[in-house]
Image (cartoon, rainbow, N blue to C red; front, side, top):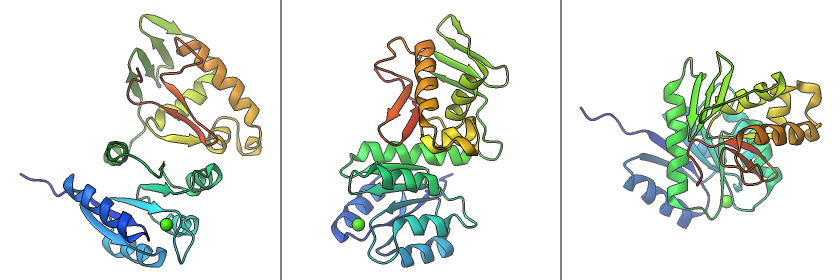
Length: 234
Ligand code: CA
């Protein structure tokens, strides 16, 4: 039996880029809806209930950030934002507003496809989506048993280190912003204390990575946050 292909909504004002992306996505057997403005995009999202949304942040009518905020009222549809300018603050703000992932233009087709697949996979796992067991390369993490190992070596983590790693495991494959990590690990009053994060991430890498200066698992997204890789980086 052929299952229905996921429905994607693409909100992008640049007509050429919209057409290119649409063709690319349709070639991968996705069903694609498009909108050229934030307003139309919001209408389409409400009426058609897509499985995933790809949103350009620079729109002519409503700011992309506002589109995310309005979408997030009553909808958990996964959102990938596209940012034309390599503006870290825009990306960080979009993620903090509730977007799930981002790509900076120009990006490759393969990269977009892997982000879409990862997000759809994560949604399919819900509810009860908290991932209790995680493995990538030699790194194994069992959240309920609080057990972490690299190859044969058991890794001993402090409670804070473990909490930090847990948040990344629950979002494996996705970027988590500095603010989100600080809030989830230390609490809401710590969101400005990014030095905590740097220190603890450094410790975690020393315990987990074979070369902490060139991490394969705990990846830095410059200026935005961290991502636990779902695939082993060679
Ligand atoms: Ca644009």
